[in-house]
Length: 294
Image (cartoon, rainbow, N blue to C red; front, side, top):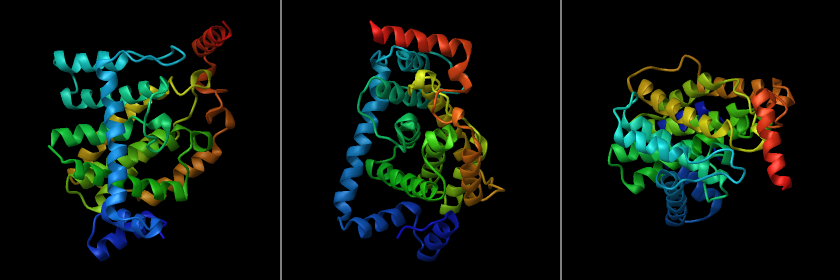
């Protein structure tokens, strides 16, 4: 059975001298009874879906079914290609890919929930863009997905991945934590360093509410995928420089869970609080409802 805590994960990886991705793979083999090749091939298919969703919106003007969001990934991509960006081409490209996935999702396209549909852009954007920068192979990217999965399993065991239960901190926060830990390990970091990155990301996103306009996974969800991507990448650099998390991963996950439980239902995906009930939020909701009635 997969370990229950981050501390247990670090200890077992240390005792066996293996990375998180290897431990996750071995556990999946044991649990499913499937061969390594079957599991890795399934992950390759998931990676390909992630690639397609992350790239499609860069060259196609994708709009959501409601019309609330769309055509922004193209703008960010063109900006990255044609301008001296403030954050640099690498980071802006990652932002564009995160936005592309969100737009494809809102347009009823195919995505990988990683770990949820609402946070589907963060993990692909972070892993694919980092892999591109460092010329990582498909095999290495698949291993990064395994690392992210291992981290996500522990979050799911001790907290939640659902915005309806824990707010957006549980969706975009978990996705960002999974992504940051994954690329830290992909770039040579230890299991402890990977979980330090995850812990710092969670600390920085604690309390983020889930307040979708008109109850749709569009606004502010798409742009929160961008924010989560930037957080994951910047935190990975922080940890790879030698910075540690003062609060351990397990404590951060526990805090996230408790904060989620303390949130009123209005701030947990019900569209009854936060941005959803602002003057503009209510106008947009009415516009969408009017369009649906036509």
